[in-house]
Length: 119
Image (cartoon, rainbow, N blue to C red):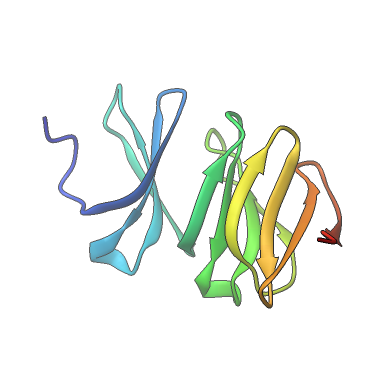
């Protein structure tokens, strides 16, 4: 079944919203309501990595030096959570795990300071 004409990458379903990076549009974050097929693009976010805690969407934004943003899929509002270049975004319980310069860090999904994980 075809829901829209976009070429989707990195898809995540949050309730009834399908979030994806649109490969045909510079990997811009796109939110598609699977009930109404209403599609919203969040043009300031180009997705490098994406994950969810079930309520919010977390993206590493290549349009903003690979900073981490939290997006509310209901309101489409985005806030910057980390002002450093990051990669490899994972969420475990209430923590976001990511790399900065090949070193793993974590921070709360509620915000705060990033902490380097000592191995």
